[in-house]
Each structure stands twice: as C-alpha cells, then as structure tokens.
Image 1 (tube, rainbow, N blue to C red):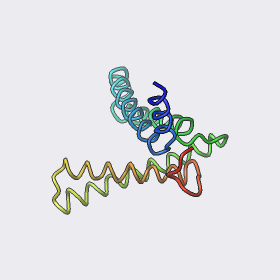
Image 2 (image 1 turned 90 degrees about the horizontal axis):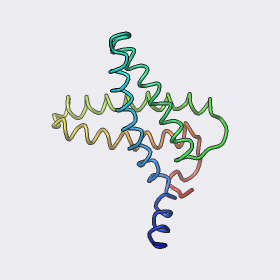
Image 3 (image 1 turned 180 degrees about the vertical axis):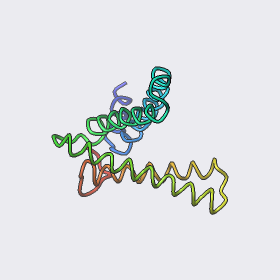
Length: 144
C-alpha cells in the first residue's frame, strides 16, 4: 500500500499530470453545466445567453481548479482570472484555425483533424496558463 501511495504522490507531483486531471474534470463540469443551464433556462433566455452563462461559469471553475490544484499560486486572483480569459480566447481561436487548416484546407478526416487540434490546443493552453495566466518563469514541466 505504501508503494502505491508513494507512486501516486510522485505522479501527482508532476504539474502536467495535474493539468490533465484538472482538464478532465473541467471538461466534464463544462459539459454538465451547459446541459443543466440549457434545461433550466432555454425557454427564458435563449441559446446564446445559455452559452454565454455556461462559458463564464465553466471558465471560472477551470480557473479555480488550475489555480488551486495545478499551478498553486498565491494571491493575484483578479489579475490571473482576467488573464485566463485571454488564454481561453486564444485557445478557442487556435482550435478554429487548426480545424480550418487541417480539415478544410489539408483534407484531413474530421476525427483526425479534431484529435490533432485538441492535442495542440491542450499543449498550447498549458503553456499559456503556465507562462501568462499564472506567470511562471523557468521550467514549466517541473514538479511542484
């Protein structure tokens, strides 16, 4: 049991591992909140407002999870929160451009193009959060 615990602790000490775990949680949460808000609000506000509200709630959840679980920074809540929107906006734009390039221009199958885009966007957003949102210098792949 001690070996399992020490291996798990070592695995969780690696920041990119925590980022992937957080990303899985954030994805599930974002999906669930989107569906829930749709079911609760669609008759009152329409799909655009449901989407906006779902995105704000999802980005806020992602920010808190990344701040506390992944990057573990102290202070700077408002500045880092606003910076996270820059990274999410850039990630969204990168995803659109990659799909346009891979599927629309190079003729990749949508399944392959989307998979490649996701991998590149996850990597780019990790670097964006590490270097910009949570402003880490040095080795962003280190243990912490």
